[in-house]
Length: 424
Image 1 (cartoon, rainbow, N blue to C red):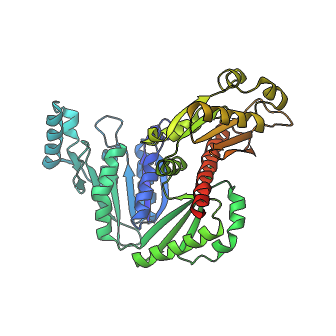
Image 2 (image 1 turned 90 degrees about the vertical axis):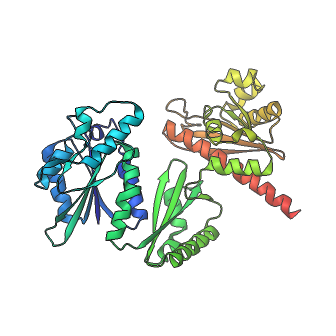
Image 3 (image 1 turned 180 degrees about the horizontal axis):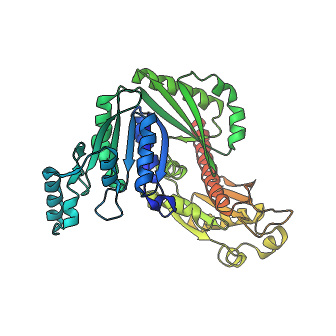
């Protein structure tokens, strides 16, 4: 089993998000190594020593990141010498790498930089092609017999990542026989986690013992991650894919994609593939739908533009929504969101339009229209369809959920139209 120790006061005070741990754990898992604990500690000698001792007592591999830079607050290297009862020695190969790096950049080598070439005498240095701090590989006898491997790496993410993929994981794979691990993630939208779990309970309970399911919810989306473990990679892939096929037959109405896909990518592919265009008329989402769509490279081929009609006056003056319609039904209504969609469809000459209007919160709600009340309209060559939702009591989540729901409604609308045309 593997344990990760991330060192840095900046992590503990929330100044820096600990992305290293999640990335390291993901890469280790994909390589067949089980991570049983992640620990974040301060830049303190006692804390580091205690964490190393505890991790070494329960894990065969301990990976450490942080605290090996050239400044005085980087104490990990000296503390490792204390833990392994050794001294720092000058490493000419490491110093040559430091000199070469500074020469390429046109900088002189300072005494602090020279100290980066000092390594604990009983470690194996790990090259750092992107920085001056070498990684350090130690092996120490464990209480239960055998040896525990300790690997110390820089906390700078791009340096650590290059070291992990280029050296650490390949070296670990040479030392340990690991099973194959295969992940497949099914992306769902339009259903909550608990309702989804109830709907697929029979399928989940019938999963083979070596295939596990994890629910990964986020605002507007629930990801279902299947993880298979086995000795034969090809057989494992086929077994997991068979379970995915069963799930596709069980809940086709909720599945929109797989693995790392996003709704905006999928919608963009569909629009580009059909040669159709999109525009948006946004009130409560404030341009967030347009932001998602245009975050995809090449979106200029299918996205025409957006009107953020946040106030009623803009709905009336720019989009031409009848003031009487707003007074009679309210800005958050089927009638207004439909009028917004049709107006932008005419102005932009777009094939499809997404229109949104709602009460994102935290204020503005009424007993009749509480916070989270949202209307989404999809205009297409066939007309306009508007849908009503009640999302919740968080402004950020309401905006995100509205945008994702809108994109998924558009995806379904285009696909349904394509299916109808194919049948004619």
